[in-house]
Length: 389
Image 1 (cartoon, rainbow, N blue to C red):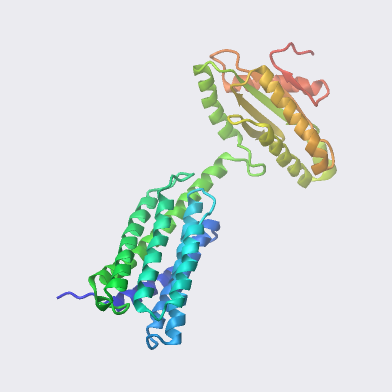
Image 2 (cartoon, one colour; image 1 turned 135 degrees about the horizontal axis):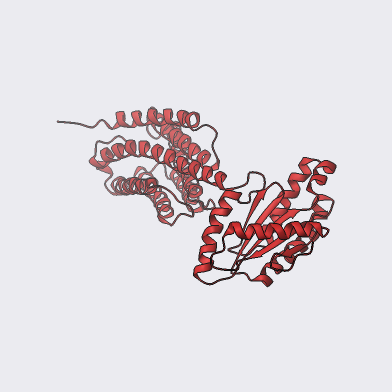
């Protein structure tokens, strides 16, 4: 009859976890915060299993057994906290693992204090570990803030199985201690736990790699749409979204305006103060755009020191008010941050008919911008107004 060797399964799993703990950082290379928490979680869980297996080499109830077993519980539960934080970050949320962390602390303290009572410590540890897993499952079932792959559901299924098995072990150890007298007892629940733990180890690593891949793909997409220096949209992304917004403006009969802005005397800023100050000026200008923009306003670094702003559902008065807010913001912040005043010239183009295009509006705004420069800079002109020679 086929028989499952519990101790051999746990030893094999610990060896595999150790290999994964070493291999993950090597193969993942330089990683961000989420991946570092996930890697730390694997390392802590590996340490927990090493402590747990080592404790069985000492007399039962001995001080070394007590110490190593307590360290094992602390490490395993702390590893779960690391994973919980990693998945929160991969979901695009601020890390919030207070519940798993509190459970880890309470479980470890209670386990240490009640170690002499085998029934208590078995029920206590397995029950609270199951509760800790449940908090992670609840977090994974909440809607993510970013697009994530199907790995989330694979992880939910695996964790749910592990949670159910942990609950069964808690009940078995606390109330049916004779059938579960030690960690290696050949009870069917323990066999399922050993098998599921091995499977969980493999699938956890898989989900970490898949989650890391998803985030890398999102970062590549972000870099493809943003200007590297200022963090504003780049021209390609702005033109793409502006075309969509223009079509919606025509469809819903909403006004729409475009502002083309060019920083005044930018070459002189670079020549006088250095390119580092020039870069700071560009970054500060984008900060001003963010500060005065409404939800739905779209701005980009069009090229060099030139920026575009598309204002949805905005008539000429709203576009002019935006321009005034931006100028006031620069007056309040530029001298303090840069040591000199920062100004710009601008041109306005409003959607004039249903066949208008973004390219046509930009051409009109560019003509108005050129005229603003010719008139002495530091002003914004409307392309619909008669332009002087």
